[in-house]
Each structure stands twice: as structure tokens, then as C-alpha cells.
Length: 424
Image (cartoon, rainbow, N blue to C red; front, side, top):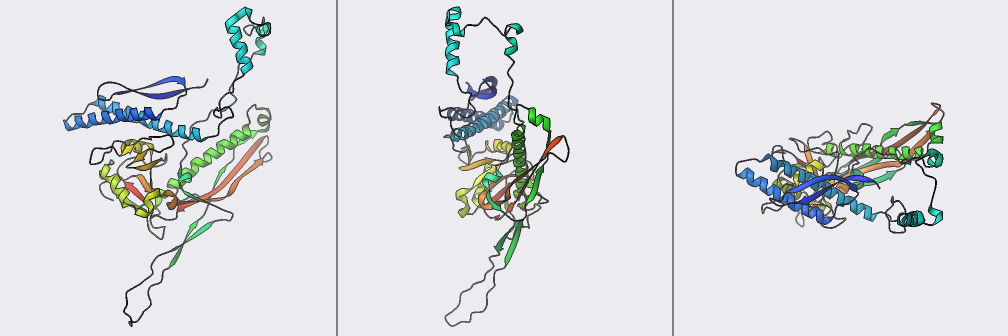
């Protein structure tokens, strides 16, 4: 059975101590109860740390303990989120999850009979041959090997899933904007009606950039490999394209790639690109840290009509910092999932984790808050093209793969940015 390293939070006595240990065991998904227990331990330890600070001392042990609990809490929340995804996936006919190894009833019955009766077992499951000696059958029992290929983790941005996506069949996409500069005024019954100002129309271009990959495999390896290398390579290219897209949608400079959402923030490279202006910023309230007041100021700066679908967008480590924030009544702003499939929240708003977002540091945009679907537009040129080329570089077969995609902000108003500092 496949083994994996899992984190388990164990509550212990005294100031909410939680011991975090890693052990090799069958895969176990964290439960909502474990997540709640870990959060209670986090709150107790964080409170103890704050008491120590107020008393004018800093206990390194308490600080290290808090960071370990914080990391474990993040892992548990991630595990709960993954659990919800698995439960939503397709099931096998017998209730097993796709990927499970199916049992062989005949083999199981024979194995049990042999283990119970040994030499008295039925003749059809006794064997004089054994795999320990090659001549007695060892040649017929080769060592099994894994027919899948392990993959190094690539962090994929959720920007595409959170944004508005359109598909085009031409070279580019243009969006027209009115400047809302229409005039009006109050007049008397017989007063003259002079002309008022007329709104002007602007245009924004969303030109797709091109992603490409051109890996090569020899024809003989394609013919002889027990693994479907062509399918595996296609999956690898697809994952790499998704990773590159996420970087582009987040911070792309627009040169043969999308214009990243962070480049539209006030003071950034594309702040003047949109007719409606830049994405407005609010300061965090501390020179190099987050504050609860800063988070709440950010949320209430967003217009009411965009608040219903607003979410926080931040890096995993920023999320760890936000977990320590409290409101004026001492309540933690961050809350874990309380049911499978429900997101973790910050001040009541869902949190979306983005691996490509900046960390908490002076001057950084540590988080975005708003309706990403109403803010960012992804433009797909129809289809991914794959050209199987066995001629250019014989004996290699090249899989020349291309994808055209663009992106940019189509309305900055439904989004706000949290800038780390005491002034915007």
C-alpha cells in the first residue's frame, strides 16, 4: 500500500501545547474535528505568546511552538480542502475512489485458506515450486515495478478558475469602455437647455501571447516503453502551461504574455492602462506586517455592489500571518472550515491561495480583496495545437505544442489591494 507522510496535531496539557509529528502510515485525510482541535491549540498558544510580550519577555520555545502549530494548521486546512475535492470526484462502481487497487476475491480466498491450513490446504493452492530458487520458479516471479512516473510538485495558480474566461477564434479581442462623462443639470420650466458634455469611448486590447513546448523522444523509446510516454508527456506539458499561465495572470508584463493583475495596482507598471484607473490600495497599518484594522479597512473600502462575491487572494505564508489577527473584541479574524467543502475565511470572506502572490514585506502587495471574476479577463485562442514531428530531427520525435492565451484587467473597480506599510 502506498505510504505517505502525514501531519497529525495532538492536543496536550498546559497552555494548549500541540505536538506535531510526522510518521509513515497509510494515507489519512484530516477531519474537520482535527482542524478545530488544532485551531483551539493555536489560539491558546498565541494568547500565551501575547501575554509573555505584555509581561516584557519573549519565550523562544513558545514562539517556535506557535510556528509549528501554525504550519500544521495550514496543512490540516489544505487536507480538508483536498478531501472535499476528492469527495466531489467520480466514484468507482463499488464505492471506491478512482485510483484504488481493486481486490481479487479468488486470490484472497486462496491466500486465507493457505494461511489457515498450510499443507492441509486444497491441492490447487499448494506449490512445490518456490521463487527463492530460480530453477524452481524464481525466473517466473520478476520484481514488480511502478508503471507510473513520479512527478515533482508544480504549484498551479487558481487565477483562471477565479477569473472571467472567454474564447475567441480570431487574432485578438477588444473591449470598449465609456468614460461616464455625461453631463446633466437642473433647470426651470422655461430656462434654456444648453448642451451638456458627451461621454467618450475608449478601447482596450487583449492580445493573446503564445506558450510553446517542444520536447523530443526517440521513436524506439516510444515503441518499446511500457509506459504511454506520449500521454505522459502531454500531461506534463499541460501542467507546465498551467503554471506559466498563472505567473502571467498574476505578474505578467504584457510582452508576449498576459498583463498580470498585480501590475494594475496603483503605482505599478500598468496603473494607467485602464480607462477607469488603477486598482486602489489600502495600507496594512504597520511598516512590515499585517493588522486587523488594515484588513477591515480594505474590506470596507470595496463598493457594496461588489462585496457579495468578494474573496481574499493571498500567498500561503501571508495566510499564516493573517491567522494571528484579532478584532477589537479579541476574536480571531481567520476561521477554519467548519464543514467539508466550505472554505476557510478571513473576517467572514473566503480565502483563495495563490502561490505566485508576494509575501509580507514593506511595500509589497500582500493581498487582493474583491470579485476576481468581475475584475480580470482571460482570453483563450481556441484550442491547444500539437504537431507530432518525426522528420526534423531523426531519430527523435518532437511534440511541438502551442497555446495562445492573453489576459488583463477589464474593470479595476471590483478589486482592492492591501499594501504593506503605514501609508498607501
